[in-house]
Length: 146
Image (cartoon, one colour):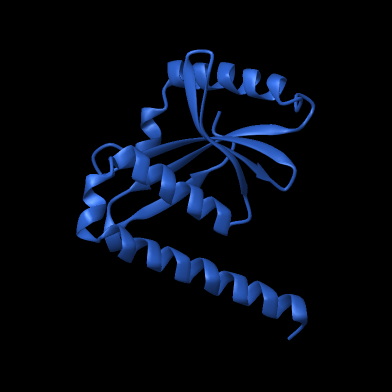
Protein backbone atom coordinates (compact mmCIF):
# COMPACT_ATOMS: atom_id res chain seq x y z
CA UNK A 1 0.00 0.00 0.00
CA UNK A 2 1.36 3.41 -0.94
CA UNK A 3 1.81 6.34 1.43
CA UNK A 4 -1.15 8.12 -0.18
CA UNK A 5 -3.37 5.07 0.39
CA UNK A 6 -2.37 4.89 4.05
CA UNK A 7 -3.00 8.63 4.49
CA UNK A 8 -6.44 8.32 2.86
CA UNK A 9 -7.35 5.36 5.10
CA UNK A 10 -6.25 7.24 8.22
CA UNK A 11 -8.29 10.26 7.13
CA UNK A 12 -11.43 8.11 6.72
CA UNK A 13 -10.89 6.64 10.20
CA UNK A 14 -10.49 10.15 11.65
CA UNK A 15 -13.73 11.32 10.02
CA UNK A 16 -15.68 8.26 11.21
CA UNK A 17 -14.31 8.57 14.77
CA UNK A 18 -15.15 12.27 14.86
CA UNK A 19 -18.72 11.63 13.74
CA UNK A 20 -19.10 8.94 16.42
CA UNK A 21 -17.75 11.26 19.14
CA UNK A 22 -20.10 14.03 17.99
CA UNK A 23 -23.11 11.77 18.45
CA UNK A 24 -21.98 10.76 21.94
CA UNK A 25 -21.21 14.37 22.90
CA UNK A 26 -24.62 15.63 21.76
CA UNK A 27 -26.39 13.13 24.05
CA UNK A 28 -24.94 14.69 27.21
CA UNK A 29 -27.79 16.14 29.31
CA UNK A 30 -26.49 19.68 29.53
CA UNK A 31 -26.27 19.96 25.72
CA UNK A 32 -30.09 20.07 25.53
CA UNK A 33 -29.99 23.65 26.81
CA UNK A 34 -28.29 24.90 23.65
CA UNK A 35 -30.81 25.93 20.99
CA UNK A 36 -31.37 23.34 18.26
CA UNK A 37 -30.34 25.67 15.42
CA UNK A 38 -27.11 26.67 17.16
CA UNK A 39 -26.25 23.01 17.85
CA UNK A 40 -26.93 22.17 14.23
CA UNK A 41 -24.56 24.90 13.05
CA UNK A 42 -21.84 23.64 15.40
CA UNK A 43 -22.29 20.07 14.19
CA UNK A 44 -22.29 21.17 10.54
CA UNK A 45 -19.12 23.25 10.97
CA UNK A 46 -17.26 20.31 12.54
CA UNK A 47 -18.58 17.94 9.88
CA UNK A 48 -17.45 20.23 7.06
CA UNK A 49 -14.01 20.75 8.59
CA UNK A 50 -13.50 17.00 8.76
CA UNK A 51 -14.31 16.75 5.10
CA UNK A 52 -11.68 19.28 4.11
CA UNK A 53 -13.67 22.52 4.10
CA UNK A 54 -12.20 25.60 5.74
CA UNK A 55 -14.90 27.52 7.62
CA UNK A 56 -14.31 31.24 7.12
CA UNK A 57 -17.34 32.78 8.78
CA UNK A 58 -20.36 31.83 10.87
CA UNK A 59 -23.70 33.65 10.97
CA UNK A 60 -22.82 36.32 8.40
CA UNK A 61 -25.60 38.93 8.24
CA UNK A 62 -26.17 41.24 5.30
CA UNK A 63 -28.97 42.43 3.00
CA UNK A 64 -31.66 41.33 5.44
CA UNK A 65 -30.50 37.72 5.54
CA UNK A 66 -28.13 35.44 7.39
CA UNK A 67 -25.72 32.92 5.94
CA UNK A 68 -25.11 30.17 8.49
CA UNK A 69 -21.61 29.24 7.31
CA UNK A 70 -19.22 30.60 4.72
CA UNK A 71 -16.54 28.07 3.83
CA UNK A 72 -13.84 27.31 1.31
CA UNK A 73 -13.81 23.94 -0.46
CA UNK A 74 -10.70 23.52 -2.62
CA UNK A 75 -10.78 27.09 -3.90
CA UNK A 76 -14.55 27.29 -4.23
CA UNK A 77 -16.39 29.71 -1.97
CA UNK A 78 -19.32 27.85 -0.38
CA UNK A 79 -22.33 29.51 1.25
CA UNK A 80 -23.95 26.97 3.54
CA UNK A 81 -27.47 26.93 4.92
CA UNK A 82 -27.87 24.53 7.85
CA UNK A 83 -31.26 22.94 8.52
CA UNK A 84 -31.76 20.79 11.60
CA UNK A 85 -34.78 18.66 12.43
CA UNK A 86 -35.18 16.19 15.27
CA UNK A 87 -37.68 14.20 13.22
CA UNK A 88 -36.54 14.35 9.61
CA UNK A 89 -38.94 11.61 8.51
CA UNK A 90 -42.02 13.85 8.48
CA UNK A 91 -40.45 16.96 7.02
CA UNK A 92 -36.96 16.73 5.47
CA UNK A 93 -34.67 19.56 6.59
CA UNK A 94 -33.69 20.62 3.07
CA UNK A 95 -37.36 21.24 2.18
CA UNK A 96 -37.32 24.28 4.49
CA UNK A 97 -35.09 26.20 2.06
CA UNK A 98 -37.76 27.72 -0.14
CA UNK A 99 -37.41 30.17 -3.06
CA UNK A 100 -37.70 33.23 -0.80
CA UNK A 101 -34.95 31.95 1.52
CA UNK A 102 -32.70 31.10 -1.45
CA UNK A 103 -33.08 34.60 -2.88
CA UNK A 104 -32.22 36.22 0.46
CA UNK A 105 -29.13 34.03 0.82
CA UNK A 106 -28.04 34.91 -2.74
CA UNK A 107 -28.31 38.63 -1.92
CA UNK A 108 -26.28 38.22 1.28
CA UNK A 109 -23.71 36.12 -0.61
CA UNK A 110 -23.33 38.89 -3.18
CA UNK A 111 -22.67 41.42 -0.42
CA UNK A 112 -20.13 39.05 1.19
CA UNK A 113 -18.29 38.46 -2.09
CA UNK A 114 -18.18 42.17 -2.88
CA UNK A 115 -17.07 43.28 0.59
CA UNK A 116 -14.33 40.63 0.76
CA UNK A 117 -13.10 41.09 -2.83
CA UNK A 118 -13.85 37.54 -3.96
CA UNK A 119 -16.37 38.21 -6.75
CA UNK A 120 -14.29 36.29 -9.31
CA UNK A 121 -13.85 33.20 -7.17
CA UNK A 122 -16.12 30.26 -8.09
CA UNK A 123 -19.00 29.94 -5.63
CA UNK A 124 -21.81 27.55 -4.82
CA UNK A 125 -24.67 27.21 -2.37
CA UNK A 126 -24.89 24.07 -0.23
CA UNK A 127 -27.41 22.87 2.32
CA UNK A 128 -26.34 20.75 5.27
CA UNK A 129 -29.37 18.74 6.33
CA UNK A 130 -29.23 17.29 9.84
CA UNK A 131 -32.03 14.99 10.93
CA UNK A 132 -32.48 12.95 14.07
CA UNK A 133 -30.48 13.12 17.28
CA UNK A 134 -27.73 11.19 19.02
CA UNK A 135 -26.72 7.93 17.41
CA UNK A 136 -29.63 8.09 14.98
CA UNK A 137 -28.49 11.43 13.52
CA UNK A 138 -27.95 11.73 9.79
CA UNK A 139 -25.86 14.51 8.29
CA UNK A 140 -26.14 15.11 4.58
CA UNK A 141 -24.26 17.70 2.53
CA UNK A 142 -26.36 18.70 -0.48
CA UNK A 143 -23.89 20.40 -2.80
CA UNK A 144 -24.84 23.11 -5.28
CA UNK A 145 -28.52 22.99 -4.37
CA UNK A 146 -29.45 26.39 -5.71
